[in-house]
Length: 137
Image 1 (spheres, rainbow, N blue to C red):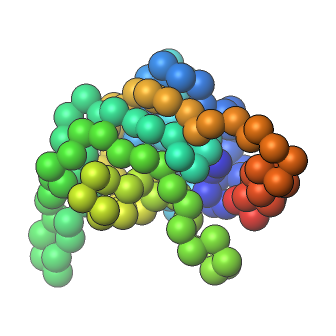
Image 2 (image 1 turned 90 degrees about the vertical axis):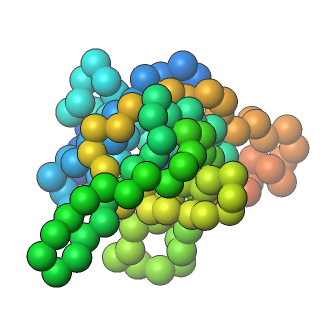
């Protein structure tokens, strides 16, 4: 899924093997872009597994300085958080230690590959749950 702030940006769903880059789309948020076409946002489903080429880094800011902080992880699972709260970023990454970081907080230009997409729904209740999640997204 793509955060609400990326709805005006051209987008496509992620596929296994996609090479992505964290990108500032100029819409008040960062997201994933296709490496071959940075103008296109690549939308992930919750549960998508990612591998980064380097340890994931976030921006750390102080009153008179800014720098990057690495998190010590090269893999993550895409999640959506606080979906019931309007005007808030929802796209996030969960790391193996349980830490959850908003995607928009990641430093720009990091490369990731899509390892695995979430399982497809097998029952009618799973289909309805996924449809509800897509609508809220």
